[in-house]
Image (cartoon, rainbow, N blue to C red; front, side):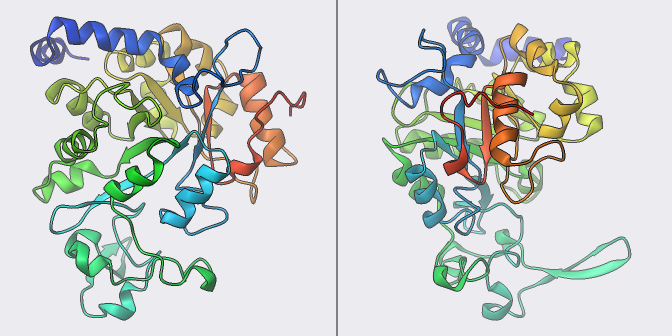
Length: 340
């Protein structure tokens, strides 16, 4: 981090707050145990934190992603955290949706056939329906379930508030800020809106509701720096990492040390850890958790016969602190004695 940013950070957070952030980073490897409470099992019988299970977009192998049905099933299948991705409606409401646009997971083309935008990529023009072009009331008219299976017809895109109330007391929220720079260019401050929403929900500070812990993640280091330095949040933050360029920047010893100045964990694509398992030890040395993504029964890694075998390898051999999976029911809660 440039010296000017460090100086800005010192101005942005009082000394006592910086100490709290440091303690969060040092204790990050134990955050998984918060969800289960005092009676939670652990993998060693000696108080070692249990790796956490994050339901990726909910139990998205079995129900349409980012719907109440998917989140509810993820919780029922034992998820410690459910993962809402965030987009913003035209009237400024945070909603749970992976894509910037609505056409992949809703019937927006049928309901609003003339509300598209044309975009060009690699010489091909396509029509898209950006979520930010629609109010929450308009988005509520869309069917967000039939694309997955007719039995989910009528499912709607939920708000962050609704997802939080569903999870309250039952699971944590591993929230992702999606394309925050895009929304910034549209006049929205996603970071400020998120922290304001969490404060209104009584979830804005670490430990405020121990049964509903909050972690914020993003592929945008700039977004996470804003959350930590500009807005002064003390919530755990995780930097998502995909691709060789980002891995070279953030997963080297120097990169991880730099990341540890403003986040408490990293979330690499699982292939990056297969290529360099020592990342986990390097991250732990500077107090960072490591939670890779995404584990799916329909396509386990090439070196594994099943996703269960793959997850056991990452948990027991590589030593990650948790896993994002579309299949929460297949997460190995106890040591399975397996491997690759």
